[in-house]
Image (cartoon, rainbow over all chains, first blue to last red; front, top):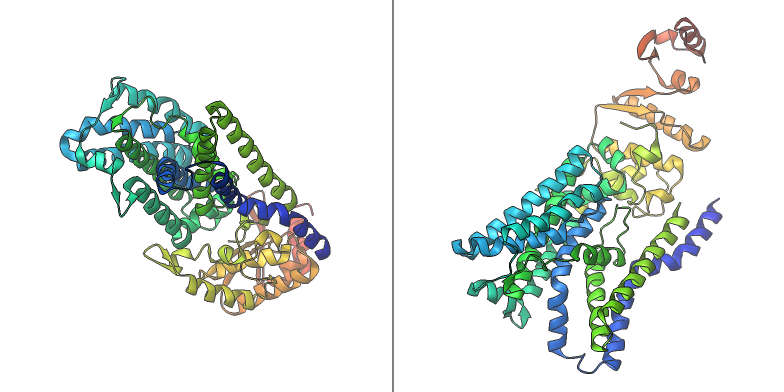
Length: 321
Length: 167
């Protein structure tokens, strides 16, 4: 019996290792490939551009990783980004602080809607967040009169284009969010409870964990991060464009999380993996663009990578129990 | 509270032995929402030793343990909270004979230490061996009660018969 178990573990070792570290190997591999094959790749400017582009995805994906850790999914993050973008110019008149506050309140409300539906009404996450996925962008377009509005607030523009010690503020924000989320997952009661709820909700309930409160807080955090990403995207674009900001971000985020080794079945949150996942998708995009391969190919490449990542996870489950 | 269906309601299979044990006591083991790993490690080590949980390390996943050891992990989770009353629902179901005796011994020890234990079981020897009082229930109603000297297999059988419970 024990010999059999051992054999099984050893057989699963390879897939397990690949699942845990594949994303890092892929990022390093792709950087090395570009170092050789792409001109002007190993420059500070290029790395800065890549990081800036990956940053909003990292912010959204980390929130998504938390939700996926509870065995859920949040399809509304892209729409929440659009909503945040639409709110910015409406309240910039009250100063940047006012606009930021309104954006965060918007994120909070979106999270409360998603979280309440999942935690208290008991709607399946994919359905619960579908409502805002569909309605959120619509509301954003109504708020913005369906128009692109350029923003001229100097602080906001500086947030989008400025940098501190050579590190762009956008990247800095993503770094800060990463550290906070990492801290949340590893060091706090909330983080431990979140992972337990995702691992076995029934057992968590019977162990006296505040399951509903944990779920609600998780969806609120995810929406807040999406709202922040919407603000960052607006700052970088120097315009509020609710029809394009955050478009497809739910898919980018889910991809980053899954490729980063967080299982969709919940019970685990991989922060570093998620960041690497977001960087990997960005690198794939950049690599294909720099070699003049069209966007449609890039999308197909992403699809192959998602399939590969999901396959590796299935392999584990097969050998796990 | 030790649930009947260990796999579905007791363990969190993908978490480590350590995190499973510390789960219910987390609020007591943290300050301002921050978890103290040192205190958790200390407490977990105590209970792994006290319940002689056989795991390669506290970081091993609970899914890789035997049924008996999984059950001890869930038991340890509750003991961490220093309960006064423990509700055990079929604590020895589906675990091997050795582990079964061990768990029964543990339960007896805990009872001796002054813990009130409510034991739910469908095994007659377990009930008679481990109880000071037995309440026989059928269809949600109490149909018989045994105290002190009455707690024997024959006493229990007759109580079941009177209560109209088919065994």
